[in-house]
Amino acid sequence: MPLLLQLPIWLALYRLLADTAAGAPVGAMSTELVASLGAATLLGVPLAARGYVGAGWTHLAVVAGIACVTAAVTYFTQKHLVTPNLVTADLPEMVARTQQLMPLLSALGLVVAGGVVPLAMLVYWTCNALWTCGQSAVICRWFPTPGSPAAKSATMRP
Picture 1 (tube, rainbow, N blue to C red):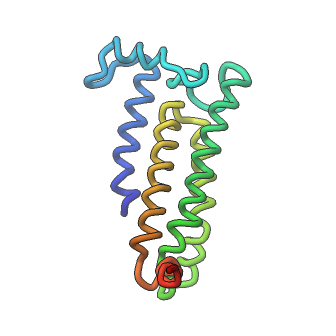
Picture 2 (tube, one colour):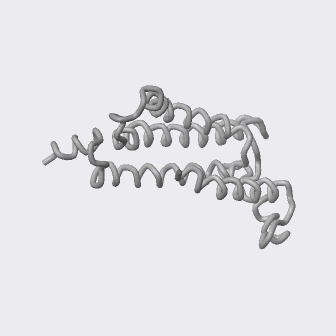
């Protein structure tokens, strides 16, 4: 359900960044603001640049590095903070197996998406992944789901 709520925001952000990266003003983004985004860089790579292939090795290193960091944080969050906080006892076996594959599939999806989205979107995803990791750590530690492995380990802590 949270993914379904975030999907329209991600799509709107993608459209905004894609259109402004192409140089087109959108909504409140005036021509000056679009030009400002076009001139903004991260470690020498324009925020409007897309994909892994660009202006040399620096471009590849920055984009691949950010995509891999985002994928790693997302994998860690889902594997070590979200999954232990799920109650899978009453789930069918196929659903439980799918839940176990989700961290890897999400991480791989982010690495693949890094090849198509503007760098600004990757930066947003990285910030979002870091925030989600912290939020999930707090929830897993102090507010675990009753009956989950996280709740069992929380009761064993002093």
